[in-house]
Image (cartoon, rainbow, N blue to C red; front, side):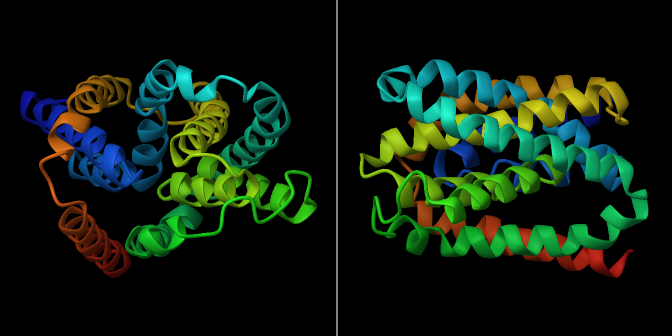
Length: 248
């Protein structure tokens, strides 16, 4: 990997941390950057999952006040998300690489659409469903599968489910969401580390950038209009989806 590519991934990691602070869609920045270094869609996806492990650790440490009193919820919900992530990992590695390349344009476009719909998702009535509602639990499992298979926009979907389940502050539901998406991604990353085509130098460069972006992101975000940033990222995501579709 050339110094230019390493610098690109470091900067992309910073951007991913910034986007994660505003929209919860870090992968819409980090995944395209990995593609630009010449990695195949499959290798870029598994490498991205490894790099974003640092985000999970950072949010766990930073969200400790919001996680107080949520131990029982995590004991019940995290295993469901984790099993979903394991299934997503198996699907990604077991299916032919061409299958992922076939669907990835639609996954990127879907993530971009969810980003645009995020303000509406946030307005969902808190505590609408019981935490034991089987339909919602199945939904968490399915989002976990998606998180293990691809991941972009999984955080937005998981936050929506957290809001539907628990009538508490957005900060507390967001912390719970981080743990659920982290559980799905962490289990998938273990499988990718053992069986997947991870580019470890790319994962390291991107991961270092993610840590830096996560630290400075909240400071910068206070000075940005999130609506403008949301549209910029979404339009770029749609453009990437079209490019991936045309070059399959």
